[in-house]
Length: 232
Image (cartoon, rainbow, N blue to C red):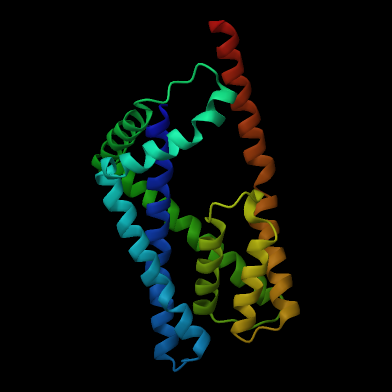
């Protein structure tokens, strides 16, 4: 795949995923407020869906008209050109920003126009989100903690937002668990239970996935290497 096209698939995946947990988080916040929970912490957390919606709107706007960021991208490439030249001496910088944005726009428009795959992708993202909520909720129940499902929804939404932050920490290990523990403690879950639940749910959502995804990446990587050797 071309770089711009592959980037558009990642961005669209993020958009679909965020749409799912914005809807469920807003519903959970409304449910807690209707039950009379109006703590300062909850009111502060209530701003998160609105901030996320604003960011999502900007992302969608730029995805449908990516040429607006062409001047910024050109400046970034020009600034980074000495580093790029060190890695690849014959790299061509001129025109790369426009090429990337054209590929991105074409790929994004193509995916948006394919309605059945788009709907299936959204449902798959929503299913993944709901599974994360169910895992943490079941873990809390197994630890004899009667945590509200609405609280778990809000906790997972914040954890997922932090997990999607582009920081160079593999899997956001440590950061994600700290965020989950902190939010649960804000909702009166004992810190020992909150930390245990965060770690146990992490074992399910990450460490049990690694053997499957690792094998798939290993197998697919060898296929690509094999094709490269044949072409050579």
